[in-house]
Amino acid sequence: MPSLRIGNLEINPPIIQGGMGIRVSRANLAAAVANEGCAGVIAGTGLGRFEDFPNAKFAEVNNLALRAEVRKARSKTQGILGVNLLVALTDYESLVKTAAEENVDLLISGAGLPLQLPAYVGSKDIKLIPIVSSVRTLNILCKRWKLHHNRLPDAVIVEGIKAGGHLGYTFEDAISGTDELEKNVQEIIAYANTFSPSIPVIVAGGVWGGADIAHFLRLGASGVQMATRFVCTQECDVHPNFKKAYLDARPEDMTIIKSPVGLPGRVITNAFVEKIKQGHTVPFKCKYHCLKTCDPNTSPYCIAEVLAKAAEGKLDESFAFAGSNASRCTEIVSVKVLVEQLKAEYSASCDGQLAEPAASR
Image (cartoon, rainbow, N blue to C red; front, side, top):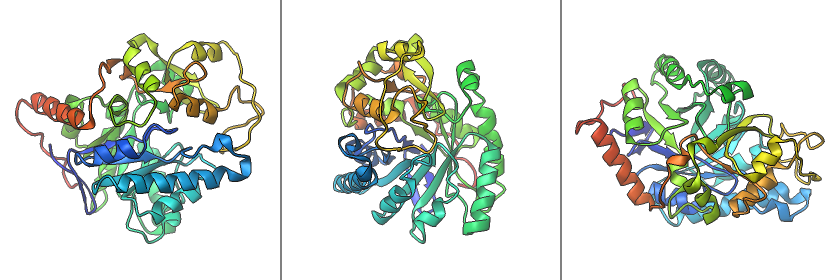
């Protein structure tokens, strides 16, 4: 495969492992992925056991946990490591600064426009990668960053509607299933190529195998981000029950819910999901106010606590976020075996010939 080049970083295979919170993408997975030449990513959302502490400790607990997780990953790899952080987090700024202090290679931000991200990182040589769903949002971001911070994104991730977890689309669009990822990718690549040097474009959302990688590279993308397929690896830090939900899932089990975050989310349906869809609520008293967009007075349940329970395998009280292809997971393999499978799929798709690398990466 051609390399994904982001500034002075070279990623080969050209894969960024997606950040899956809460506590799904952690040090063991990120380090294992980085050791295979890809970019390993820790999801910084809710890493600390915040549910065991009062509100005053929320930010402190999460920052300490993020710092520890990055250091643990660094002890296991010399490869490329990143952190994924949601803009919607109330402790977003402090978590970004913690990741920057730990000198991660990449900072990836979605669930909102990270307009102040360069200011929080300062002069650190950390690659900043926003997640967008359209050329319009990327245009806004580039203009703001250039005007206020005199810099541009080092790369951009274009996420389609088939991604897992919270989606940057309306609930109606998510339900319709109409995916304009290819159109958006082509528009964003054209826009990214107006800069010199051009901004590398990375595709996410429904990227399953080597054939998908080859397809998007042919379109002109520089690389892909993959999350769902990495859940069913030996190194993924999440509870075995969470992985089992993927292994047991059928195509018809993938469903869209309205999240308290204010965004649609793709999950694997279960009894808990059915209750939520029927209007049942899980009363709670908010101790954290972890998300800027969540109103505890109207939310049917605490999304932070539900996702924390999911990571611990308590799926009778929660649900597993997953991409549209989760039902295709049939076995638990090592990260090394998975990456070899992706390479083989890529080669088979290219009929033994490597795809031409995207121009101006």
